[in-house]
Length: 113
Image (cartoon, helix red, strand yellow):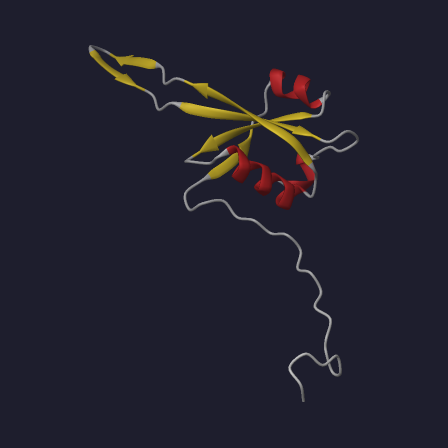
């Protein structure tokens, strides 16, 4: 049997794309007035817990929800200063990602969550 013979060759089927975020990173959909207004324009707002790049977020949304993502914008939100009596502290800084979908696609959070 030769190394490059076509006899008995099997065709390999491509595996579906699956992507997981780095350990400790979570994408949580934000439900607010602004996010519902953005959904009418094909944009969805996610809150990020942990270190996630735009490319990783794009791949994760595409694999979880089965949609095509056109772009991702990042919004950095600083931590607020809070007081409890005389003691002042600071809340953790957060990040929101605005995910733009291809025209004609949408995400239904009621079925996926």
